Amino acid sequence: MKNLQTRAIKIHETLLKAFGEPIWRNPLPAIDELVSTILSQNTNDINRDRAFDALRAKFPTWESVRDAKTKDVIDAIKPAGLANQKGPRIQQVLKAITEERGSLNLDFLKEMSVDDARNWLTKFNGVGPKTAAIVLCFSLNMPAFPVDTHVYRVTGRIGLRPEKMNVEQAHPYLESIFPPETYYAAHLNLIRLGREVCNARKPLCPNCPINKLCEYKDKTK
Image (tube, rainbow, N blue to C red; front, top):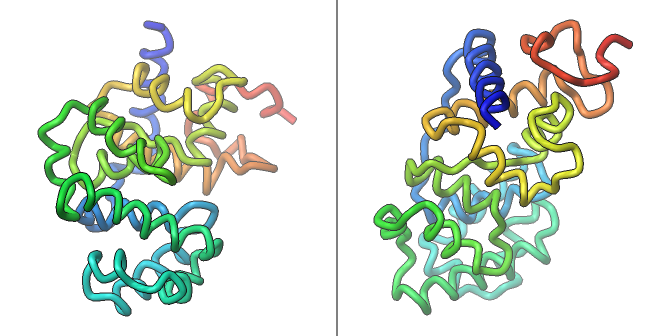
């Protein structure tokens, strides 16, 4: 494990040199980020943002989204795809949070441990480990490591996690090998690496800044 931790730090430092310190878009309030991340499932950032902006334009508050006709929510978020699933899911989460907390404010999570906050979020249907980690990391500045499609693929390909480990297992595993203070930048830079260099079908290995730290068997082909 110690060797893996050393390697993870080296990969993080090398990506920082190659890509610089990444900056997430302006952080959203936690409830906004929660809805945005649900919208992001199985779509790209552009379509997610289009759907989110359309939802906010149509409904002035999250309470009005919660209480709206489901059809109207579905119509607003169509740009994100899977609207028939995501619309009811968003409303169900908003209703469940209101029933438990009395309001749609998640700032109280900052007073909890990361594990307790994560467990609280993931008990709601449609909120998985990635969604919870994004809310915790980017809205609440808590040490959580989100594992999206790119992070999962890249870390498996370069040998930073066991190849057969599933995505849910990858969250606590990567949190154990990266130092907490690196989670924010390491997550974003691994995504950039996956999008620009370590592509799913044809990775551009000669152009990869971490080529020498990579254990991908086919990179010389």
